[in-house]
Image (cartoon, rainbow over all chains, first blue to last red; front, side):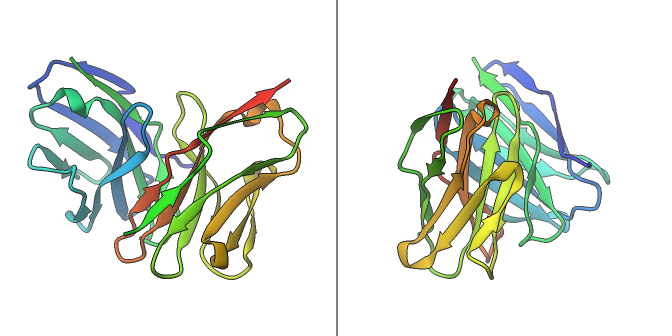
Amino acid sequence: EPEVTQTPSHQVTQMGQEVILRCVPISNHLYFYWYRQILGQKVEFLVSFYNNEISEKSEIFDDQFSVERPDGSNFTLKIRSTKLEDSAMYFCASNRAGVETQYFGPGTRLLVL
Amino acid sequence: AQSVTQPDIHITVSEGASLELRCNYSYGATPYLFWYVQSPGQGLQLLLKYFSGDTLVQGIKGFEAEFKRSQSSFNLRKPSVHWSDAAEYFCAVGVRSSYKLIFGSGTRLLVRP
């Protein structure tokens, strides 16, 4: 069964450094999403992406964040200058059509020191 | 504003006992509703979903949920819990206009042998 994959599974970085989190959505899916979960808190929506542009972004998704689909398979989340409060689990998700079930990847745990 | 409330942070049940996890939502229109499960170190796996129609929906692993519009609830049930059901369970509402998911804070299920 096809699944969403994410790399790396864990990343440790220094405050102020740039990080890129990578996702490979399911191949025939058209809608892509990033969510994050700070330890002990709820899963929060960050951004949705369709047809090579952002569909919606949350308040969390400020100018330090960007997303890109650099080729036909990858979907990336970049944080330009990480802050301590960016430490969280980041989940990628995808679906074929917006109203359908979103399938989630296993997540990338980001720790900012 | 849309929101999801899961009033129980932790629930402990004995193996073989029945289970009900509560979920209440706030949403202005007919919601899309989901239950996801997260095992340690894993991503979010869909258990079941409600889009329309029959208000009692069946999911994987013997789970079911009932949509009650009058109570704004979508409680998850299982008649007999197995030790492998120990995990964190998230209820979510899908926003029709943007397709993003809004999650509850989760309920951690512990299963006593």
